Length: 204
Image 1: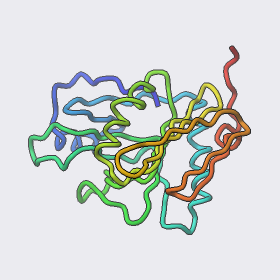
Image 2 (image 1 turned 45 degrees about the horizontal axis):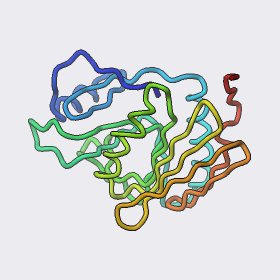
Image 3 (image 1 turned 180 degrees about the vertical axis):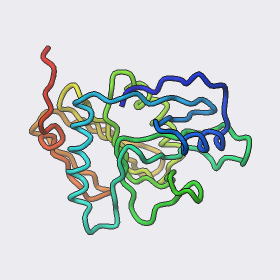
Image 4 (image 1 turned 45 degrees about the vertical axis):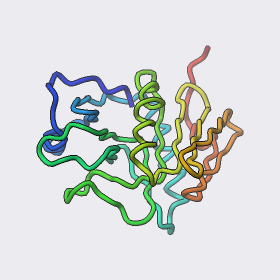
């Protein structure tokens, strides 16, 4: 997904954002009072996302875990005070896996609080945010998150961050179509050949 671009709106509260988002036809992310419109995705981004859904969805059948696609919002922040709070991140991961019963922000049940694994397909405009502030918020405010994957769309490469005991995270780089990686928190394995099936990489 391309980097969210700021909407021409002034600071809005969490309540205002959610009310507008639930009535909107297009998706927007929210960060500390600012609303960002989500741009369209590239062809490779779309292919990779579908491949990930297929690969993980099949393995999750019959388990306590389930995959959700990029229309699912995640809250990364403290419970906002009704009416005036502007703190927090509300984001749309490309793919999120929840294990056990979903926990929701409110009665609308459209914002999840307990992700187990999150996968982001990198785009040039979003990469810094996905690696930086977004991942920082995920680490600080989503204690159920065990695995965070960054998937390149320029080459067959997946970066895997896994939460260790305490506050640390381990990092593994998986490169090339022959590579594979295990995601222990959801008992799944991804082969890069499956992730990049039908993807055509640019030359050079």
